[in-house]
Length: 203
Length: 190
Image: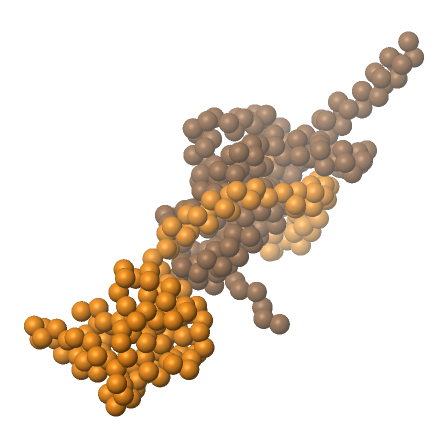
C-alpha cells in the first residue's frame, strides 16, 4: 500500500497548481487549526476566519514557508497564532480570568496531591476542564491546546510559538498545575452546593 | 541545577532554559514530569470529545475558489505532458496526411463532422479542414486542440489559398487530435 504523502509533498504539489494536494492538506490539517483557534478565541466565527486566513496565507506564500525552519504543521500553527494575536490586539477579546503577575505565585506545586477531578463524573470532568482551559492566561492556554489537546509534539510547538522547547515543556507543566488549582477551587465551590440543595429541600 | 532548583524555577515567572539538561540527567524528575498531572487524563478526555469539531464546509468552498483563481492560468503537469505528446503526434500525422493528400483531390473546406463540428463552429466561424486519414476515425467530442507550426506547402496541399505576400516558411495551425492520437482536422491561422 502506498504510504500517505507527507505534508511537505502536498505543499510542493499545491504550489505547482495541483488542487487535489491543496484539498488533501486542508482536510488533514484544518480540524486541528480550527479547534486551536476556537479554544484560543472562544468564538466560532473568529476560529472560522483564522482557519480561512491561515490557508489563504499559505496560498499567497505570505509568510514564506521554509522546511529548514520547521514542519508544515508548525508553520500553519505559527500563522494561526500570529493571526490570533493580531485579533486579540484588535478586539481585546482575549480576557483570561487570571492575569498579571499574581498568578505566577498562586499555582505553585499543590500540597494536596489528590486528583482534583476524582469526585467528578466524566461529563463534569470534561466541562470543568474546558472552563479551566479557557480561563488560562493565553501563553499557558496555547501550549495546553497545542500539546495536550491537539497532540502537536514539543519541537513543532516550539517552532509555532517561537520559543525554545524547554519553555514549551515548562509552560505545559505549569499550565497543568494551574488547571489543577482551578479544578480544585471549583470542586471546593461545588461541594457546598449539594448541602445547600439538601437544606432547601428539607424546608 | 539540582532538583529543588529545577522545580523552584519551574514555578517561577521565567522558565528554566536548562530544563532538558536536568531532565536528561535526573531520572526522578523525569519520571515525575512524565507521570504528569491528574489533569492530563482529563485533557485526553476533552481532546477526544473535541475530535469531531472542524471548520464549516463554507471555509473549504471559499478557499477552493481562491485557489482556482490563483492557479487558473496554470495547466496541470499531466495535461501539459499530454499536450506536448499530442502536438508532436499532430505534426507527424498532419505531415503524413498531407503527403497522402497531394496524391488525392483535395476535399472542399467544410465544417468537420460530429465533435469537430462543435469545435469548429465555436472558433469564430473559421473552418477546420478534415484530414484524409481521419475519414474512418470514430466520431467523438473528446478532442484536443493543439497549436503547431507547419510548412507553407501544407496550405496548398490541402487546397487552401496560400498568402503569397508572406515570406514566412512556416504557418501556424491548429489541429484537432482525437483521444486515439490521430489528427482529425486542421485550421491554418495565418
